[in-house]
Length: 622
Picture 1 (tube, rainbow, N blue to C red):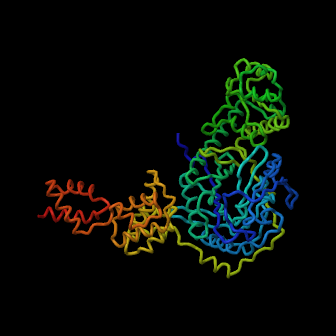
Picture 2 (picture 1 turned 90 degrees about the vertical axis):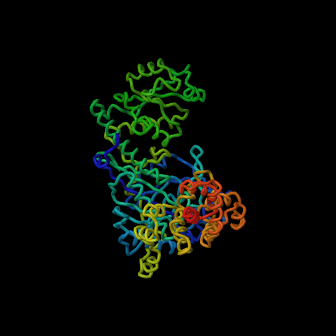
Picture 3 (picture 1 turned 30 degrees about the vertical axis):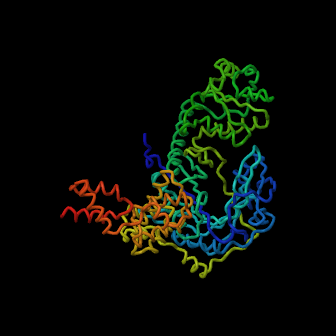
């Protein structure tokens, strides 16, 4: 049954992160280039949390620290310096990046701070060598308008991007330093109460507006979205790293579903009279029950010298197996905590037993020993992991008695989410002591104004004035080729219709890709020569797909040769007329539609359809 999002009190906040395409990194002079070749060096680090100025430690940082991870950082001599390695103080912030951030602030009608301070945001998941991310609050309290959408902008920040995670090997995580320090604009919206689909559109318009400054990077990973979701009676949940805009509606839908189901679980537990004090951080060793087990999962652990322990979960029968998101149950929520906190691969709960090779007899023996019909099994070779797993499982069960816990979650590829860490607290942010405040001057504002792009609504109106339909104009706005389309329209103004240019880049290219045509070698120069051929009436618009297909196989071939080899040189009207008259007489067809159908099959791509129609009319008139 569809959810009434207004009825459940859906509130969503967006955090849109866009990499900037500037001449240097934010706090050093290294080029902001992401590479894929073999790194030149590696260093190994451990990170620990530090107290804020108020003497407090951020809970999310404590959570990460207790994982006891080792970090390997890979870098390049020509694109990585001592700033990225946290062996040298940061340089003054990149002026170009500041100008872009100020332009975005003005574009979104935000209040710019008189002075900009660099702050340290505690992050010890290894993505920053220093244990914190440097960030600058640029502006606040803005309002962005996109057609019928009014989007409150809470803050606009300029920050350094994190290092790139390459791989995880147990307790070791490998990061690449090339991305660390690339300038990143972060737009945080206020509360939005639109539908999930509308939220996706808002996210697109925000990112697109920043790209239109001409100072944003393009390509995979250059724009990232975090989504904060809550419902009435639920809790604010931050979902990190939604990989694609199209996934935003599904992420919101599934998070609403999760919170509604967690609230239903809370109500059921209250109805059953379940109490927090029933759950203690204790366990029972049940290894002997599984001494002859046929379960491969348990057998591997026991053969490795491990053991099996059981946790009592009184009152949770039927709850552990209750679905909270598609193919994810309340037991999965517990398993997520175990996986994040320990090296264990998860847990087994009584609602899914018998199963995994565990027999009904073994289940009965565990229940009898525990004195309850609901329990959780943990199997492992490390006593500390098992003890830690017991702690996090009991803590999560206790949270269930209160509904939805505040936490940070990661987006899965299917739109569901998994636990990452607790939500950060107020102790997370403190001043950067190595850099002075930056006073925003009138000169900086004037330079930034030059970067403010044309508003989206104005662009759509302009495209419509060129003769495009509004639908096509909106397709251009959403197209990754929007700036190239603008350039080509201006380049061939009065020679090739804007509609034809837009249709080619928005629809024809997409259609060819769907058909398996490799367009990776098609460049701006190819398209310019293609539209030039149209402008001088060398080809017809129907020839466009065939020429692009030919280039996809032989991109270095001159367009004149391609046209000649494919036989797509546009026929003059006299040539068309001659063919029309000859075929009409030969086939003895006098019906206009039938004649057109036959001729288009023979002349498609070689003759302009208008020329064919004109010649048919002449023939039929006698």
